[in-house]
Image 1 (cartoon, rainbow, N blue to C red):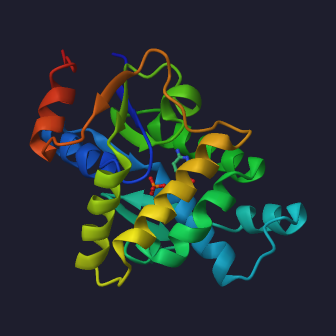
Image 2 (cartoon, rainbow, N blue to C red; image 1 turned 135 degrees about the vertical axis):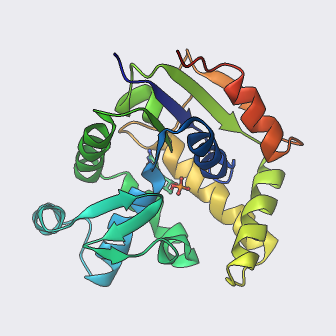
Length: 217
Ligand code: C5P
């Protein structure tokens, strides 16, 4: 029997991970947050003070880095870092790290490996276009910048990171710009992906909409 894979792509703060996590639970799929993987490698680079433009240093670092996602929790070299990965510092740096070809190569390889033998729902920027071009279902989920900024702002407030709405808005705008303009696998909607604008929709409405397309034998 062939595994089923669901790809969810879209810009920052569109609610992809919230939605993907809940769908995974509902249909018993494995959820893979690829953004968390780019965040984890960013954290490592910052901690080790690596010059990310130096290929040799980078290669060495990648060879000595272990990233695991276990039931939605992210482990960097066996250390639980899920919360740390959401910090404003990581938000500011992650897109510059994620545009480095060497890093993408490694992450895509890891993502494909995780997805190879199970039913997965994977969210990110290049899942439908690059990581799983043969995904069973592809969605492109977005919302207005205003609404995405508000959602991110509320999430950050809850986690105790004090940032103004204006700052959050600028940061996701900047990240989307870098993610869409980079040379290697930029953020873009695959032509076959189903486009969903979630502006004004509740989480439940978005989940119902996505589930309405998915047929599990
Ligand atoms: O999804 P999230 O906002 O956590 O992703 C953080 C960053 O990781 C994105 O802004 C992007 O730079 C990078 N990313 C990527 N490709 C993916 C997932 C995330 O380049 N598939």
